[in-house]
Length: 262
Ligand code: UDP
Image (cartoon, rainbow, N blue to C red; front, side, top):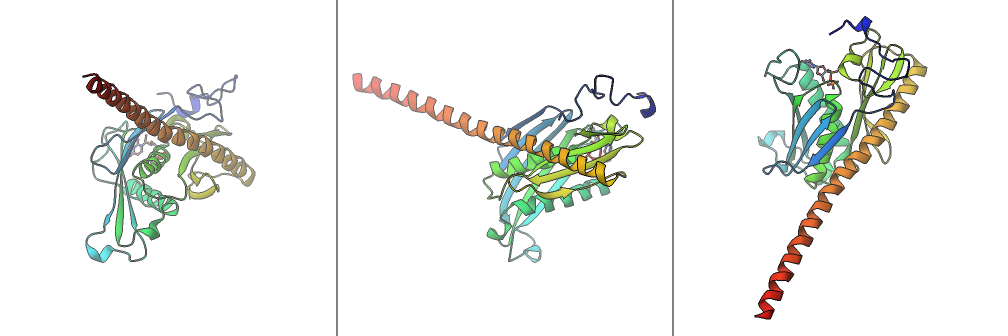
């Protein structure tokens, strides 16, 4: 690959390295209910990022001494497959994975009615199979859909999206090449969209106050777009169930008519 200095981050038509506009997300596809053994699950493709999430619980937190009589524990585990990055990653969870697990679990805890499930744990396992920056946001977005799929009561979904800067321009949803720009800023953001309450905000790089405001506003817009995609994915699941049920009812009616004729 060319050195970051040689990359044209924004071309004369205002397009980015992967052809997107500055305020454009990568294509996002979410499929809920993909795992049979999990209470809730979701698969997400966000550009090149691919992740699978399984939700288990609320179930008794064990060993007993970890139990909290006032609320459920949210145990979020973010892991990257060894083959999900250009240079093979150690299968052992590193500091980065532990940090992402911690902040993402805390973000979801704000949305879940944890106080309704004392002494329990809600386990959320996220596995990344392919990556190109923005994986913590993709993972959090899918995890929130998986929680809804599990029927766990929540104040709202959590919608996440990173915003950043490359070559002096504020951009939505930076890809890896953009995250590697010499003046890069990467700011993962997650909100509960109805109230716009921020549940995760991290920052890598240095940015001025005015640029930060611009970036934050763009990030919120991105999260709101992600929210629409999450809702559509969940709605589609129930539409599919309704269609299946309708088919079954029609089949039963047909069989009954046959019996009546006899
Ligand atoms: N990455 C990598 N090796 C690692 C960790 C990350 O190559 O051990 C890549 C991976 O593609 C990831 C990107 O660097 O998506 C950006 O990582 P960052 O820590 O900024 O997290 P993310 O943007 O994925 O949330």
